[in-house]
Length: 356
Image (cartoon, rainbow, N blue to C red):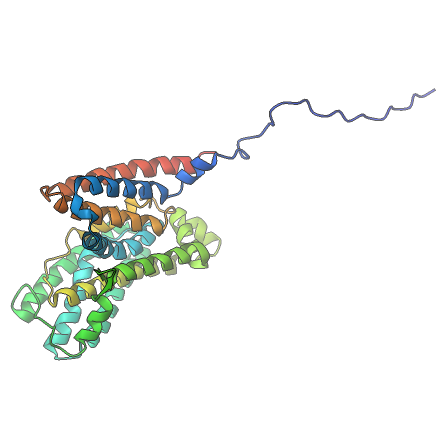
């Protein structure tokens, strides 16, 4: 007779630690938090602030802090679009002189043609956006690295700024436009101040925070933000899934042009005149603020909040050294130390983010 098969009996697994493969291992919350691009620079900014609060007592004064925030905002407004561009896998060496180009355009056009200053402001915006389009178009069409493309633009703008200013005004600086039509209205938007608890705060601080909030929303809540991360991570893979790589790259350079225009207008309406040789070297500060803020040079990683803290660190160090009574030449040394430290932290973040 055939034997009937006995029913299978399910035996519970032996007690012990749950087995997982490398794909399901979750890192501790603290480690995941530290891997965020803005956390490291936030801690660094707090450390720098505390350091100068103890070593430079004038920093504790409200007016001193307002001045620090002002210095930070003029860097931070430009560092934001530069950071977005770096997340998209590129960077712009012409950003510093582009600020001066924008201010020179608005000033000379308005003064030489005796126009309302708003005409110069609008034309300067068009010129700044055109510079961004040129950089992006050259990058996309030629396939050259953004370093070479924007280095060429940097040299072109530097020479044009000096040559055209001397040709038009006979000097290296533009004429004073403070008595021209529309000046007061433009100054109210780009370079005014308001009082908070008896302390004068520059309007650029407000614009800086507004732009940072807008950039954060774009990166985290819009399709365009996904495109920026995608083209920075791998543009060929992004193109394969339908991301408009050409549009994204060119628009990012145009955002840098917009930032250069805004800061240029602030400089013009703050000082009424512009020195044509300024701006050289500022592009490195903008890039460094973005790198310190957690943006990787390889692209595809970063945030808009990180560069806010990176710019604050710059403003804090730049003014803190003065308030502490130290030689301001030390600022460059601090800049180098912060940049190297940020690069090492970013390297660790990159390895942590890609580790399974």
